Amino acid sequence: GNLWVDEVLPSHLLVALKVVRTRAEAGGEARADRREAKGRVVRESDGSGAAYNAVGAWRNMFTFAIKERNLGKSFNPALEVKKPERQPGRRLAIKEAHLREMLQLFGSTGDDPELDLMIARFILITGARQEGLLNLKFGGLDADECTVRLDEKFGKITDQPVPDWFLAELLAFALARGASRRKDPVFVKRLASGRFKPITHRRFNSLFGDRLQALCPWADKTQTTAHTLRHHSVTVIERATSRAVATAFARHKPEGTN
Image (cartoon, rainbow, N blue to C red):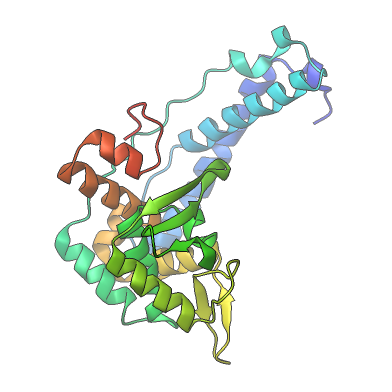
C-alpha cells in the first residue's frame, strides 16, 4: 500500500498471496460452519480460487501501468509469480428427474412463478448467460428470423436461434408484462401493486441459492446455478449434433473451450 508501482517486487506479491489464501480459507471455513449448522452440504475451500484471481488481477494492474508508461515492460513483478491452476469444473448435463423437479419447483413456488419458470426455460433453450437475460430487450425478439439478441460478456452481441413456438411464448410473456417499445426489458418481476420491475442478479441468487439449493439436496450437493443450466443446454446440443455446433451455440471461441 505504501509502495510506488515500480517498487513492488515479486517477493512482495508472494507475501500478499499468502495473505489472500489465508483470508480465503478463513472465509471458507466460516461459510462451511454456517452451512453445516443448517444441514446443508459443506464444500471445502483451500483458497486456490482466490489466489488465482489475485494473480490475474495483479497482472492486469501492472499491464495497465506499463501501457500508461508508469512502468517498464521488464519490471512487471506479477509475471514472475506463478498463477495457481484452476480447479477443474464438472460441466455435465442435469439428470432428467432432477430437471423435472427443478422446473416444478420454479413454476409452483416463489413470488413470481411464471417469471422463474421462463428464466429457466430461456437458459435451457438458448444457453444464455445471466447477462443475456438481464440485457434482453423487447426489440431483440425477432419473430421473422426466430432469434433472440443476446448481449453478454465483453460486449459481444449474438442473434441466437430459438424455436418459433418458444419465441411466440416469449413475445406473449413480454407483452403481458408491459413491453411495447424496443428498449423495454423482457424479464421483469411482477410487483404487488401490479406494476413490473426489471430483474437483477439478485433474482438468480434467490432462485438457485435460496430456493433450489436449499430445498433440493442434489442441487445443494452439485451447487446448481443458472450457469449449470447453460452447461446442461450446451451438453445436450453437443450430444445431439457435434462439438463444433455446440461451440457455436455456446458462443465460445473455437479453441476446445467446451
